[in-house]
Length: 368
Image 1: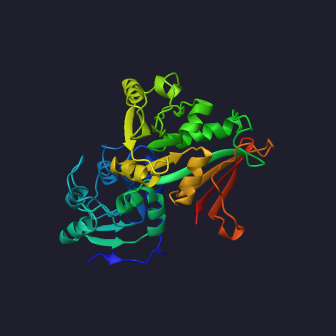
Image 2: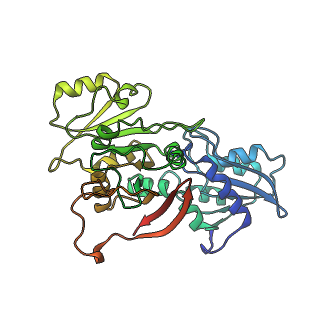
Image 3: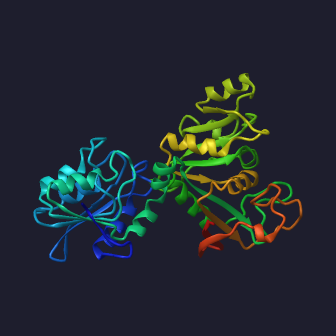
């Protein structure tokens, strides 16, 4: 039986393993981020992390860099796998290497692993301690845990607005509210997610590419919510659909001829039953999770944001506030819809992190 330690127990070696793990962000999904440290006599003798999906796991990397792992201790941020997938089981590698003690931050919730890895290590005579820096490890892989346990991707809702809370003028113009540095940060965010979701209103107003322009980065899959199939054949989205995988979420009653033309451009159609003219957002997110999308970035517009928040589908909010004032009761706000009647019913955001990005304020938080 593995020794369970309290979540408050920490280790400098596990802290290092967590630092390594985060380097895989945006490259290992749908796998979790994992880091590994091998220690002997209080000194790190090898380390590694899972660098990309399909590539060697963290334990494999660390062991390949260790000349003499026999009798050493291993610190791993997630329970080692005990099954054969794209890679052979890590438990076998750990056992064959002669590791005598394994410290594990948290068990893997994936059913093919979940406790089996620890059991196999213990049957081989390796002592296992589970729960070291557990909360940090769970926080690091919150998107993975959510998809595996709840069948939903981790949703980050992002918008940029003026100091008086507008995302566009009364005429719909929005380029550019945020400054250059803030826009660069958004490209970094896109580089780390599996999909970007926007409503058709945003596409019609801004004609965006929704790509990642980080050097060496990757483009997320684009998901356009367009119940009536209004997407223009001349849009940037359509013109680049063969290069950037794009889902168009449409109603089942959208015009067949129109859908055929859009499909010919390389766009993948996702037909959904509409309710009161709107797409079932939870159903869409569950579909994306089934396709192993772990991280989803929602970039608007106001009606999509309102629905996502009202239906409690958002895990994290990122807001850029530009030092500009637009004014006007008809200017567009970031969260549309009916809104609430009483301040007591307002959605509160916890664990705020506030910083300056170029000329803009950046606020991150988690809906309560």
